[in-house]
Image 1 (cartoon, rainbow, N blue to C red):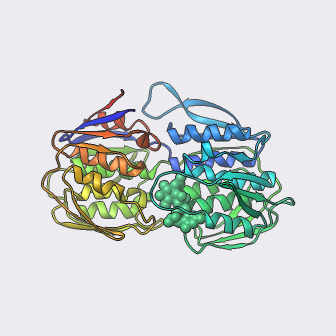
Image 2: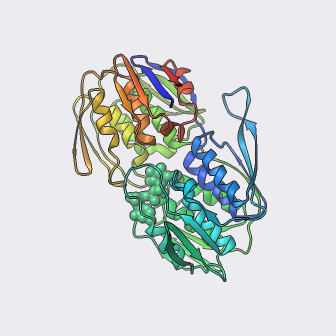
Image 3: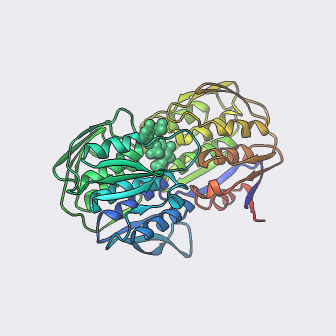
Length: 429
Ligand code: UD1
């Protein structure tokens, strides 16, 4: 199993090209199941999660091909994906595939909308909480699907097709919003989705659906209205840049010091993080090709933050921010309100010398003068990268085990960091 070795202490200087957003690419690829024509997606990141989803889509009958060249790369590396689900040959999404990644559960929406039936395994994914699916099932039932549970599978049936309705989510859910939007696009009549997730990735998917012929009003707001259409057609769409990858490297630059340009980034999607970064003492500014982060000496200031649905501070950046605060000059308070068990990185950061205490959903991070390299273990996707951030600021060597978590969500992480001066390498056994 691969590991990553980091020797801390180097400042980062240079340019990092931001990849397409994993959390948009996955639902966009799933949207290809809604039409028998070709959906072409540009700027798709090369990630383990994308490869896994390609396998799942292939299992349903989608054909695919890839081409294109990625920004900053000199060779063709398959950033454009063409997906054609001419015929859905199987409406079952099996346990072996779905259990590895929660987003694969989202095929439920398009399958039941297009084929009027689906059998999808209950999901797995990062171990960051119980992550129920009640909101998905509530929404699909509202749209007229009969839902049952059978041997670990969700079975959804709507023999005469889905019918639009008013859906009020009691809690904001990104995945339930994606699923409902896709289902409603092919339902009969009007669907109103209230308390919809406003994450930019949801808006990106909605915009792609519109290109495919869907009728959606209120994109980007918490109330979206969908007029169902009989069929959707092919389209071309560019996946928006990854704001979580952007935020991760912005925090990394603040941690190590230096001057890093995040090319292709959209800083306006990171207002909550950028505000916190400025409070902490980093300089963050929009630049002509993206975003620039600088920190040259000076103490990091402690901050107080809680995670919230967009436009609040993203839970997917919580672990990274905590890593940064391990070196602040005082006590920071970080409250996690989205997932109840998203503190797996705390004990691993402690191995490097971090001083963090947990009280329920709140972490108190007392900054320390020095972190010291150690063996650490990646526990989930975002937690893993927080250990990379801490390792880059620690004295000596840090070895990160279970790197496959990182490969699920960060494209060529070591290469991007190395190009800016980080001492980091992958060790393959
Ligand atoms: C997506 C993101 C993930 C991010 C999360 C929150 C992708 C591929 N993943 O995950 O990176 O951390 O949004 O921004 O885009 N919930 C229920 N019932 C449900 C569904 C969700 O109670 O039926 C709860 C969850 O347990 C959680 C909260 O709602 O507490 C938000 O989860 P949700 O927005 O659904 O996260 P995901 O879509 O799984």
